[in-house]
Length: 422
Image: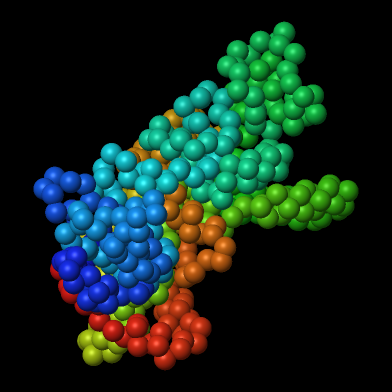
């Protein structure tokens, strides 16, 4: 937990000295009340000193602004080097101090995701904000529900899975829908296909999302090459147009959109301390406690920066422990052909289904998505594919430490050690 590591007692008679001792820097702060059992006041701010002056200065009788001068006994605070660190620290402290209403304080809302409900006999892909351990396939996060729906419309045009919400009865007398009329759905509703044929199509949808479109593109490219080798140029031209359509549909896929269990990234941010980078690991969509790389001190340590990062990101290797048995996407790509084979719903659930969703998973995804889609976005994000990109992390750290040119006053504030440690 990113704790409030600085504190100062408040005495109304010496408020000028109190305000002067507080840093004029961004962060979060907690005002503790004198009365035992009274709820504290938690907030984030772009200037801790100015926020304290607004809340604890002598009140103006004509003003209706909140004033806590008569009830506050102490302030605890934490300086934040970036908006992401500030938001994450605010979230963790709000959850600790206000467990019943922290979601409202942080304004958390689960991000929009694509879901394939694998418990349904005839699964379909749709947009949702509910993330549960129901053995479904979850893909995202997206910036908004509108962006997820826009992407899904173009993406699902590449396949023939159903989009209706009815219960499939396989009734030949059922009239069907416009998608079946346009040959854009296999129409299981009126037995227009067998269960096995529909399962193959769902498998193609899952494989395409799981590989970020690579499996479908490679499949069509192989078919195009085979058609060209067989001198079937008309089919090769049609497949080439289909590849262009696939590329256009996948162009709307965000870089961060992944199957939740494979959302493994590191978010790099400048920290409040001098020449320090905060490394926020994300494993399976869950934010871990950050690692602070203090480059001003690392030069005197026997370990390299890469070794320090490996100890944080791959502790099982650092401790010579066996690797976890979870199958990664890279291992599946090596073990299985890229063309999906027919599979049963039970096989899909065991391979793709989300079986563990702690309560904080939607909250962490919300924080990550809020930062990733913010404009402008500070810091950098690096994705794990087969291995963690340690060299790219070091180059990203160098870029962040270089940063924009700072004034002498900003450099002095950055080097200054925060006063009054708790």
